[in-house]
Length: 339
Ligand code: AHM
Ligand code: MG
Image (cartoon, rainbow, N blue to C red; front, side):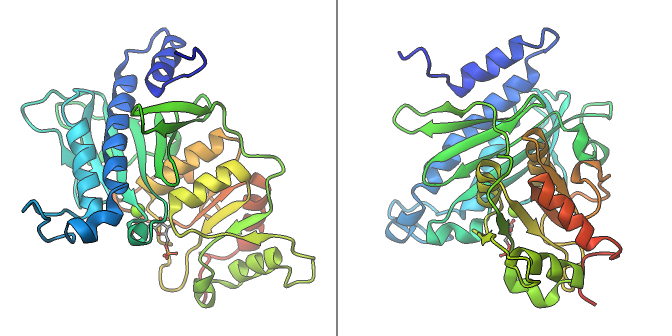
């Protein structure tokens, strides 16, 4: 075997060895998450065959019910994570309330928040989609975790990451010592280290990324910010606009090429669209670990004390230079919303 090939499993174990006090619990959680990622990858790569094998919600040629992929992904993550004894509670975009660990399994010291399949409206067009996860240490005592365990500020995350099911499937994560990326080699079923210590390029490519179709609903500051990127104010512009419409894919590009992704508040969605706990906060941790910044236009995402499980937040993340600039354009606006 090529001695320079480092599997995700090996990387997790070797990283743990660098922390003599580590119990292995976090490694265990990460390892189980990679199994879920491989299973979701397998199903996502078959998505185009649904028309041949049977439509979602109907029976396939084998007489089995075909599940919607986002529900499937939720179940896969839950089933991969419910029994390892490391978690005390979970929460998912696909489920309204807390997800407790079934009574027959032990509970542990950690909390898992996840978006099982983000950007799932893109599946039918074969556009990249992703799974996002955020891990906290519990603060409650007792067997089951509580809402309080889930409603922790982003800076308290002990690990965060995402899996992107794209032209290849990649898993990117951080435990607070930088960001590492792994690419799935489907022929051997292993994630291999492909991006050792990801840093946002400085300066990054001049890319702004947002759904400009919402322009009419934006605040004046938000419109002026995008006007700056476009060169409307005569500054010369020079930016490219890129928008996949899949948060993980837009973030992955931002991480590797630089620029800024934003999903602002608008008059229809005064708190924006994206969810704080399992979309914004984990990606913000990765962004900061890679030398970038993530805010809601004013506050660092990682400093926000959540009040609700499915809370939304405006999101600006990428190279510091542009995120700071967004803050200047939005300063003084109560929320970046059109009047
Ligand atoms: P979802 O959780 O329903 O998939 O929505 C989240 C997705 C993100 O991946 C993406 O950044 C955003 O919604 C795109 O929204 P829009 O279509 O309004 O541009
Ligand atoms: Mg989502």
